[in-house]
Length: 179
Image (tube, rainbow, N blue to C red; front, side, top):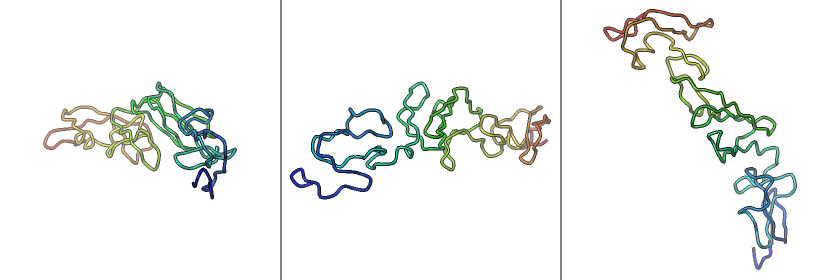
């Protein structure tokens, strides 16, 4: 910029000599925001929105999570992305730039809410099998390693077992975890 003169604009931007506000992925409908430029500047052309410092195609924006009731706020979820709220009771997904949330999603008490392969959701820890909403110990040793010290009947689901979980007696004495 030299005396309000622009020699070139970065990729995916165009020159505009009037005051203009860039719509963003986070706020695509607003043209009254903090990205207003009061002098000639490079802005996003039609079909593009600001995402950070770059203009990207609208269809690449994904979905914006703004509702505080979902437990997450101000998150842009990429297309195909999944996000579980920190409160672990809402799972949102972005498909065709449309956000859908399931408020009945519940992580199992034994599950960890973490990101794996770009997906933030509930996962069963080592020694447990399941999809994160329901984690079953794979054997008595997994129970013992998770702090269970009382011998008794417990429900397990071995890793290679494709049928329903079943009950076994676990002996937790002498180092524990014996079936």
